[in-house]
Every structure is written in C-alpha cells, then in structure tokens.
Length: 124
Image 1 (cartoon, helix red, strand yellow):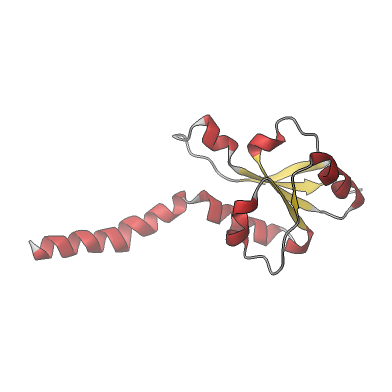
Image 2 (cartoon, helix red, strand yellow; image 1 turned 60 degrees about the vertical axis):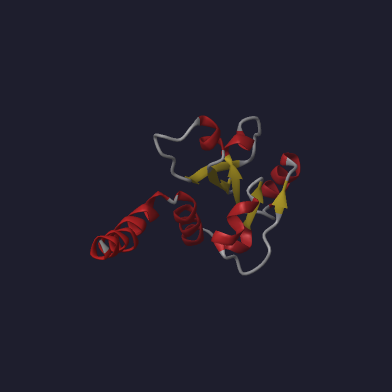
C-alpha cells in the first residue's frame, strides 16, 4: 500500500504536473512578450493580471480610455500594448496584432475573450 502511494505521488510530481505546465498559456505568453518587446515601451489595456508574469523592472502604464491609448500609440509614447481580447472588439487602435495568448479547444467564448493580445504600434 505504501509503495503504491509513493509510486502514485512520484508520477504526479515528476511527470504529470510538469506536463501540465504547457497548458498554462499565460506564462508562455508573458515569456514571449519579454523576448519580443522592450518592456519600457509596453502598456496595459485592461490587462493588469499579467504584470506578475512579466516581471517588469518598473511600473507599466495602465489604460482604461481607448482614446488616450490611441493618442499615446500615435505619438510614440507607447510602442506595445497588452490587451484583453474582449476589450478590442469595438476599439480602433493604431496598432497591429503581434502575438496572442494561445487558447484551447475546450475553452468557452467568455474564456477566449479573456485571452491576452500583444499589439505593436504602427511604425511611421
């Protein structure tokens, strides 16, 4: 009985849990954002929860007003934006999609709406 318990826990901690890490799309997305961007030029639009995973060296500006964000993208004050997909539906920003957080076939539409998108400001 003890040997079975030890074998089960060993499988769980050595094989199963590490394999499930690939399903944690938020951390993978944050790592890709760190590789692609200069975090000094990055802002957030309804995406505060990513801050911990980004491990930015300083505070990131947060926007709630899409018009102000659009102005800052045009002026060059912001070069990159992370936004939740649901908040981009009715917003026209001067930026293009550069990267999106992966979704899985079993996720519902409301969950997909919470996935994060990395936008790059249009370059002049």
